[in-house]
Image (tube, one colour):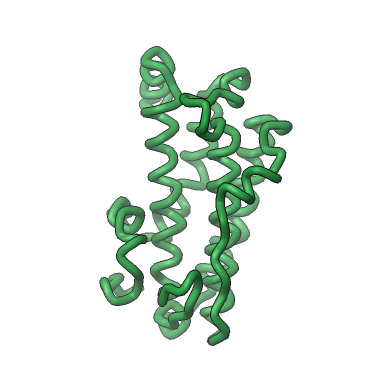
Length: 182
């Protein structure tokens, strides 16, 4: 895969994209195992925790990662097939409001993420260089298929850090670091 160029994505995606330091397909593959392993370290009773009244729960953050991946993968599919119709944006808060993620277990969300990511990886690996370079408009932003793969990986990195820093107390973080090192 050719390197990602800055003209392949809008600046709003840069913070996500910049977190992906390795080959994006390798990163996506690694996340297929590491994100569920990370979720397994979070006690189920912590899943409905919010660090502030107006924030999402851990389950809602995980659900948002899943929703976002579905939407970005759909965009990648459409753009890769040279579909030039502009795609609408989405309101993440509206989707979460009607998601019922808090009724689910972290384990079920982890499994859903794994199945979704594995299916998406099959799609992403099927793209050739020409398809990866194709661009499309979504949310009034021109983005390449390849950049969308980086956004998916980087978006997960971003929210994993938020869960670690804002949702888990210091003892949880110590246990998490210990579990991930073994």
